[in-house]
Length: 298
Ligand code: COA
Ligand code: MG
Image (spheres, rainbow, N blue to C red):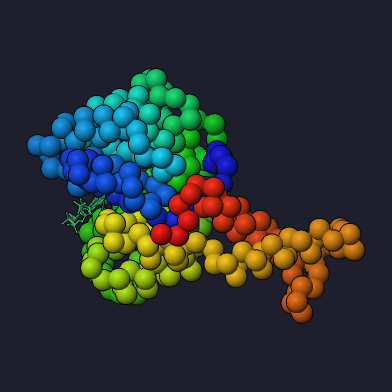
């Protein structure tokens, strides 16, 4: 049920209780913002954070940035109130933590409806538990139906390490299979999928390596925790000028009258098939979405 293509290169989290961050986000070069009520907010601050976040979203000022509220799970003491408040906040969507099954998201969609959320409100799902990875296919498959407006998956790599007792290592080999499983599930059902966070926000080199790895794995972007991570992430997940001009060349070549109806042609001495034209279409669409959103590489 994804609407038109949009760039989700940089998806920045901020604690919902941090008023300064909620304000600062209005001027940061992030494609999407996640205003968090869950892991980064202590139990005593949950209600205050909910009010702060919903007031900030209602007041607006976030421009073309997509605004998503991460609520607490419906099974917690706060989830129901979070959902009811987020439903009427005007946010673009809500992010559900620790999704383990399709049933869990169906309950969220039903609760949103009961809370009179607009039909356009997106549901994003975090995959961060063993169940979430094992059931990634059935969770993603909801996107094919009409009941759950699921548009995007987010990897929760910190929780995944905790739940599985795997270790953080720079090349992430312990979690690679799970990341790829999730990417496959997303692709099977036309969802966007965003990589997990890189905790050491002072380490630009490490971040760059992880962004490059995430892009190679097929992720659309990366979740971030600090403004210092935006520039590198936007750079790596933006199609390069070279990629865009090569893509335009491929599309133009297939448009030539002599190539009408052909499945394979030659461009600059290389074999190019219709499947490459499909890849090129997406590359150009993403580049154009970035250009029109006015947030070209920071
Ligand atoms: N979003 C928006 N603004 C942020 C931000 C964020 N995630 N993190 C920091 N900033 C702002 C600060 O408010 C500060 O702004 P100012 O200088 O204009 O006052 C500036 O960026 C520099 O921040 P800095 O002092 O380097 O960081 P900090 O010590 O205040 O905070 C963290 C460090 C890690 C606590 C903070 O970045 C953070 O809370 N990140 C998000 C955590 C989160 O949401 N986790 C849940 C998902 S994993
Ligand atoms: Mg988590």
